[in-house]
Amino acid sequence: MASIVCMTLTELKAAMERGDLSAKDAVAAFRDEYLEDCKHPQPLNCYIEFFDDALAKAEKADAARAKGEGGGLCGLPLAVKDNILVEGKPLTCASGVLKGFTAPYSATVVDRLVSDGMIVTGRTNMDEFGMGSSCEYSIYGPTRNPVDRELTPGGSSGGSAAAVASRMAPAALGTETGGSVRLPAAFCGVYGLKPSYGTLSRYGVVAFGSSLDQIGMLARSPDDIALLLASCSGADRHDATSEESGLEEILPLRPKEIGGVRAALPEEFFGEGIDPEIKEKVKAFASYLERNGAVVEPLSLPILKSAVAMYYIIAPAEASSNLARYDGIRYGFRSDDAVTLEDLYTSSRSKGFGKEVKRRIFLGNYVLSSGYYDAYYKKAQQVRTILCSGLAGVFDTYDIIVSPTSPCTPFRIGEKVDDPLSMYLTDICTTFVNLALLPSLSVPCGKTRAGLPVGVQIVGKRFSEALLLGIAKTYHESGGT
Image (cartoon, rainbow, N blue to C red):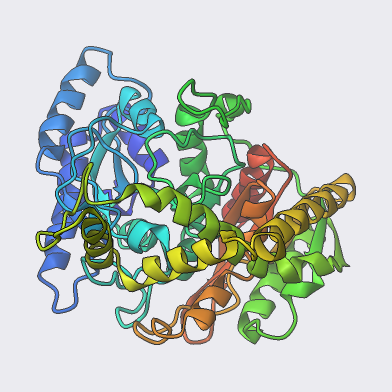
């Protein structure tokens, strides 16, 4: 049997069902990997906390399995991003403003996975409140990329991606607002799914941009992501935006016959600003599709050039509204040196939030303010409608859109942290997906000559996750040839 930490979630499940592996041994193996990394001069810092009770829960899972109980995912380990509630565990969104907060209940997605037998091993590092593309904006310090510890793992779900890539977890939950699962997946060389808006309940996820946010999954195979989706998707009475998508029936995940698939390559994502080696790898993936019978055609959709601009109006506007609740009164950080109520608000928020969160609150308040609302926020929403209409037209003709996940390879820690515009442009290929409520999967498609991972993004129409994962499974099993 392969080393436990090298096994995929699907392989772990099969080994446990055969009786070849206990949940206790699996959790212990991933914990030992984490503890060993803590001794490194430059720890990856992907976990904020590895839960002390994970082994005890694994023992209970083994006892349940011995009785023929425990659910379909009994004993399988899972890491969870620090903005997704796990009942009774600390939650901070990597922010000082939530210091000391304990989750009073579990997010619906976590609750469904735990009810199916999964064990949450710990909470992973992130950019504060999900606002960042490098996992550097965190009160716990930056997460490092397992490929090269001098590089970022991408953000904001960088801790989840690094945990999976470094074999400290077989799979992890992250969240997406503009690319925060797919970008880290590409930077760390793992699979990352941003589901269709509504596929997974947002109940129990700390809100950033409510019309954009979704929980996503990171794993080392398409089958692993399908395993998670089947367990936790579907409508939730606590979230009116959630829907029945039929993904509960996605298992067993079947390879998709590539012949007859129609794929569009947006010219806007292959021009200036995209790393030449990334173009090369993504076009090699497109050639793989063609060799196997797909129709691959270039497509110009100029509205895509506006996606980052409209995203950085809409997302901060929604963030400024959602983050207004952190006032130093109800929960979280409360300043001790305030005299008046206004002082309390100002001091608590100024000291509790980091600089990137404050930057986006300022931006959001500005675009929502009197005199600027129509010029910025209203206009961005109008352009968003045009984007959604244009993409609906694309999917009348094509099954998928193929593009780079990121315009660049992983960059050095500290390289862009003081250059917000450069940091924001790392989202140039991903934000349109969130704006249009679509599903998208980042698939590892090789490495650059310097050995850095490259991700290709496959986008489909709403609730086409089975198609995207099926294509990825075919590619995965073929070895990309």
